[in-house]
Image (cartoon, rainbow, N blue to C red; front, top):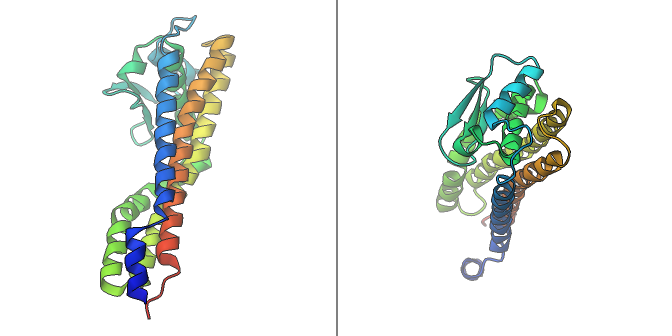
Length: 238
């Protein structure tokens, strides 16, 4: 009876719907951020500042002088690296004078400000990276090995699911970090006059679209974890 049930389940796995939902959320968020960035990358800021210049002014306004601003290859590859104290701006942001570019640059400066103020969620996320990397590498192999060696209810499978859940937790911790960086960016762009009037609203749209990618990633991870729990969590071989 168990063998028959498992064979039917392998042919028609309703939990794949959860995975597909996650994929659609991710694709939708990616399309949204690309279209929004493309739209406002054609809007030149009134100050005419480049992304790099805006980043430098924002950091200086907060008394942060030990962070370097660098140009990196690629499109939308912008990131802040706390290990090297660098705001890394992509080619489409570093020298661009668009509202979109300035918004993205300001967001990365928001992370530098978090680092300087020892923002707790950022510190927590950073401390999780080594463990999460190990968990990401081992979770699926352990689940597969556990099923092959000990069956669906193997403790090895449970351990694999636990390791995968670390990635989910990391995604959840990432959300306040990203939202806070964007909030800092918008507030300072407005108060310093780097962006003016409706430009601030445009930047909110760009950063809001970017935030959706993190929300989609977290949702996708949660759905995948739920699928694993449904598939393996309640099964115990006789």
